[in-house]
Length: 255
Image (tube, rainbow, N blue to C red):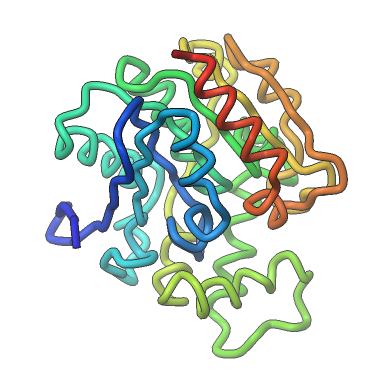
């Protein structure tokens, strides 16, 4: 099982095919398989001639699962992506970041712009710029509260309580997911967003109650585009054919 290490933790990844490399970054409480591979993303991207690299964030999937929040956060998870690039001897790649993965992708796009090309942020919104009520500052504590419960938190809003199911059935370790939710994920400032040199497609669901919609985010990016999927919530976007096709064609057009 391919992996690399950071601070003694093993982090799983997998590589599919050859071509232009694109790294897929999943959402919290799930995994590469649960967020992308199981919904046909590998096939959609491979059809466009791309090499698909799947990463299981620390605390998720087949990676190690520490229960300490200091192991997570934007800085650490982004550093893991850079370490993966170096491990695979890749000078640059595109990114597809879903939900929490979009937070990490945007962090990478403005802190390591020389390593990343045309990319997609999906199931995300203006909260990445710190705009309430969909900023990580507001969303992450709600998720941590739900995940720390020892039974399904049915009294919480459904879109929050659902993460308890994802963590126990897909992510593999509820307490590791809770620790990940308590990591530090500072917003991207408009100034930093404007510095992103790559073209970026922002895809939001019309009725996403988690990270909301991202028209302001797309406008703030120097080369941002925006697509809103009608009738879609946060969780439907992983299975959305429209989202998959838009992402694959956007990335392929950058050839």
